[in-house]
Length: 292
Image (cartoon, rainbow, N blue to C red):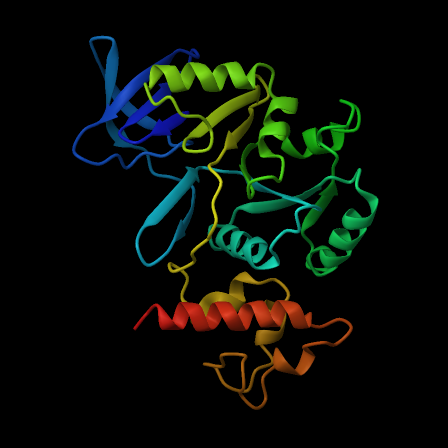
């Protein structure tokens, strides 16, 4: 499945033909990136079955679950030096990726703004220390050659592009995918949605022969993690996880217990950054409250 909007979706056949399909039943269970079995019906089709997924990247709050895409190799989290990005939202996206065993790639846009970029790059130091791949970019001003390191990270992979409004997602897609705007218009017209990437999810081939694909995602204001068990939260945070084994109690929350291996290294040179522990504390409280 290569596009979705409400109860309409677009399926791409192995030979590259695209067909508008509808789910069998009241609600579509398929998301972009799914492999599906479908049956033709006149000039459209019906989705009969979703093939078992490798993974599903999604967010969940108290009201609903929002699925972004399935069968991903990585998630490119695009943030910008200006406006200032939310470290809380970045952390939520990283946790969601870790929970589904999807590799994250962080790209910081607007390197052409030296002062804010320098501050933002410094804020990301804990994420470099955790082993995440971080890449600088100036998506509007970069030459094709300067974009090559990002292209190399995408080569042969299916990548979801995730990020807040203003981070440069549309610019990234348009720089890497020839005719992306035209493709989006065609899909929107086919689905009679009249809407573009702000409300729908679309699959773009960067290089079909190499298997390189980008999936654009709608912007979001909040990223709920209600599907995460608070007692498992530390396992999805690579800076906290190594220190959990040092905790005295098996059910340690890493918030106040004596003999906590995590608390012992908060603020230490090779330990846990204090900002990161504060994010953990806030998320733990939020996820615990949502279960009662």
